[in-house]
Image (cartoon, rainbow, N blue to C red; front, side, top):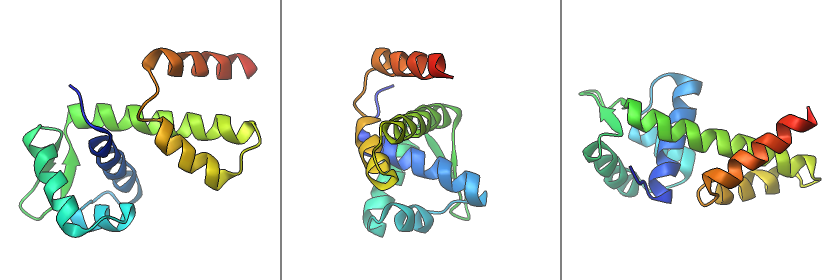
Amino acid sequence: MSVHESGEMYLEAILVLTKRAGFVRSVDVSEYLGYSKPSVSRAVGILRKENLIHVDKDGGITLTDAGREIAEKIFERHTVLSQVLMKLGVDEQTATADACKIEHVISDESFRAILRHQNQEK
């Protein structure tokens, strides 16, 4: 399944917020990402239609198995890329911002190579 970068950002945000608080609503996603409530509402509708999230009657958002798989992949990329950039001397704020951009466009092959390299250094 192909999800656009914005969809990946929403899924990753839902994963992070779920880990932090356990219960996630659209307003939480809006605050976390700094996006307007109408934008989040539209994205939630699209993600629900694509069966990547479930929204219960109380407005709680949970990831489906497919949504969780995508979110965890993006979160792992974000974490690893941030760490690699910081090891190279990039300050944390810049490394995190750059990792957020790179995580959506890097190929699986290139990311696996970075993981292999990182694991060899340990």
